[in-house]
Image (cartoon, rainbow, N blue to C red; front, side, top):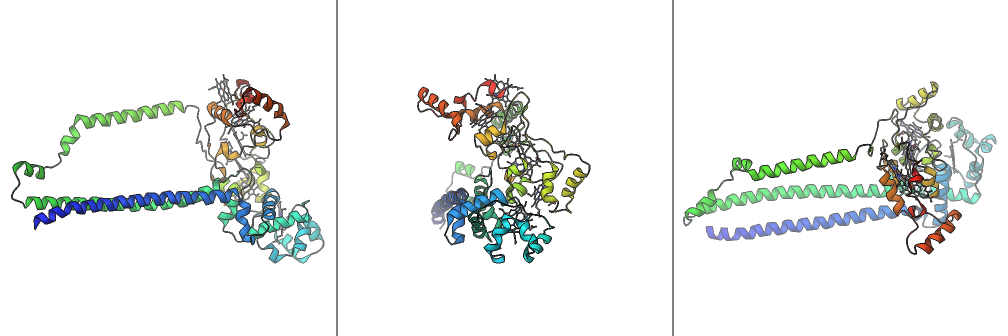
Length: 442
Ligand code: HEC
Ligand code: HEC
Ligand code: HEC
Ligand code: HEC
Ligand code: HEC
Ligand code: HEC
């Protein structure tokens, strides 16, 4: 009887191990599949907002919608969103409220429509505290395409509409991030399930081990050595006192200390990750992310000059004269204006005076996205320094980044000269002298 049970035990164990291996492999594949699925649709949706929006409009004029998308962002997005009120009303459903023959003259010159005594226009104008919408020199076709874009975005759950509509300086980061988050949650659940399975397995193995010992103890034909092995207990006190263990722990401790020491010495003067608390709880996630306000609406000089200015309180007032007037955070803006004192924002990025950095050279001329250097600002509640801002960081990019020479006559001859001298090598910033000391040091 006993011997039968004993012989079947190894089989039982083997079955357990195989089942476990099976579960593990399956979940690893799942995780991989989820990752793949999660990332790809997000990325494509971000890359092609026009096609993503097309089905909603009946698959028709994708080109018009794409054109409308760009026009909307360039002209209207600072005051309007499709599905929520910003400075002006939510524009979703506008074609149901008003005929296109009303919308066209309204966008071209809204005050004229109000002045004509149009009931709807007058009521709306009063409802929005007599705030005048600017006039736009847009053609009928352009306005129609904006309306087509608005219709295609109607009723879309905030997230997709906002992600697809990448404004200036926003690459696919938002959309992909969201998808990855979803996949991440799924993987987390799988991991928890795996841990539970593991615990169950360990408990089962201990039970089986004890069972086997019991069975063996019941046998009469064991010799002294077998019994010794059977009754052997692990001697913890001996284990703690063993020099090998002490050696290993000591070495690991010393290595960790050394690593931390080297890291902190290397990080002297490095402010990567610096995230001070600001005097007003201003959120880029809310303004640049959710409400899609163009970076340059506030950082007005970022495409034109050396530095990207921080907006004055007046720029905040363009909106906050009306929005959230009762919020204690917004009242701080009013107080600053009353006292005629600027808001004391804490500066985050700051190169030493010995280095010269120019924004317009990088944003306007090179066409780099803000996020390349500043990271996903549109997701930050509080801004932090994303890049190291060391000399090595500048130089690495200059060595690798090909120059944006297209349609820039200044570079035509230089490119020819470079190509005859180093055929095949890319024309990088450094080929143009971008790593010479004097370019960055006065
Ligand atoms: C500076 C802010 C601002 C900008 C920019 C702006 N609007 Fe407006 N818009 C408003 C305000 C405010 C109203 C509400 C009416 C009023 O107070 O004049 C409004 C009303 C409207 C309405 C009527 C909405 C309704 O529910 O009946 C339409 C349509 C409209 N805007 C379209 C546009 C389009 C298209 C653009 C871009 C070409 C644009 N707006 C740009 C502020 C703006
Ligand atoms: C509504 C106005 C507004 C918009 C839109 C806006 N910002 Fe800002 N930004 C601010 C204000 C105010 C500060 C200073 C307070 C702070 O650091 O949060 C700031 C700070 C920053 C800083 C840190 C400056 C420092 O002290 O070193 C960076 C970088 C930045 N913004 C980048 C961006 C980018 C990129 C975008 C577009 C994705 C953007 N901002 C959109 C208002 C704005
Ligand atoms: C183009 C319009 C616009 C501009 C410019 C703007 N904001 Fe806002 N702001 C908004 C909108 C929209 C909200 C969200 C209101 C809501 O949640 O209902 C908001 C919300 C806020 C909030 C959160 C208020 C609360 O209690 O929930 C703060 C703080 C804020 N803004 C500060 C600023 C500061 C500081 C500036 C200037 C640097 C600024 N905003 C410029 C549109 C703007
Ligand atoms: C090539 C990298 C790079 C790109 C691209 C870039 N920045 Fe910067 N940004 C920097 C550096 C470096 C500083 C610190 C400059 C200094 O201290 O003189 C900085 C500083 C800032 C500041 C603080 C004010 C200032 O000028 O010192 C703001 C605001 C800012 N950037 C916004 C933006 C916005 C908005 C964009 C996109 C339109 C952008 N940046 C694109 C590298 C970059
Ligand atoms: C992400 C890539 C990137 C980073 C990071 C970067 N740059 Fe650049 N930089 C460029 C590109 C691309 C150009 C070429 C622009 C053009 O077409 O003239 C450029 C051009 C320049 C120029 C003009 C060079 C010339 O030949 O006239 C200077 C100066 C400069 N960068 C300084 C800096 C400094 C200082 C830093 C670090 C604080 C920095 N850059 C970081 C990409 C970068
Ligand atoms: C692409 C721009 C760029 C070029 C080219 C460049 N530097 Fe720098 N350099 C910087 C920046 C930015 C800093 C500041 C970095 C920091 O604070 O960590 C810096 C810092 C330094 C410092 C350190 C100063 C200090 O206080 O730590 C020295 C020294 C220096 N550079 C020398 C040189 C020399 C020599 C060359 C030519 C071989 C050169 N640099 C070329 C951007 C550049």
